[in-house]
Image (cartoon, rainbow, N blue to C red; front, top):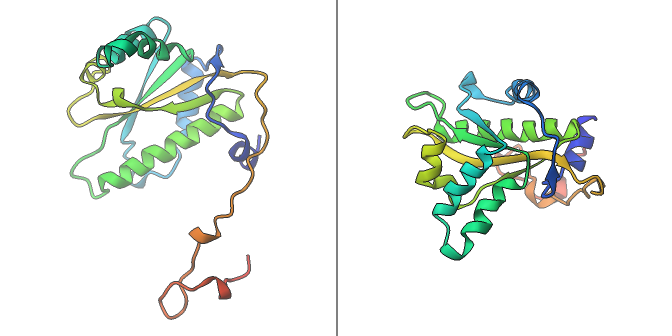
Length: 194
């Protein structure tokens, strides 16, 4: 699958089943995704893979901090995919690369990983929610004080009935300008030809 097709056909998949990539395949895809822009090559992130019964442990942690009437529903959410890849942001402090840029690098790597998964026939969705800041979840994932959970990639194989139409391209012309010779952003009237 070429990059343009991957970008135009990837969707956040809600209905995921087995198979999911195994540890070796995930590790390989992560090596490729890690080539995303990362000033200083800091790799300010790490992944914790959760499969099988370990998903129930995560579900129990998430449920502990949910309202009483939603605990079982919250716990069940971790069963929505065969693989939950926990994304941990681990910024390098005191480095010339600011934390915001490290977070941008982490997001770029994650998007690359999602596109790679899609190109191999897997589906994924990046899920967050109140659980990312949960003390119970932090303990389960053994996060240190400097680290933050940014959510989970739920990964598996998308429902075979899902339509893979290309996304329509949006008009983003109101989000595009260019610097005119005078040093001020120019109006649409004199846009350079593309």
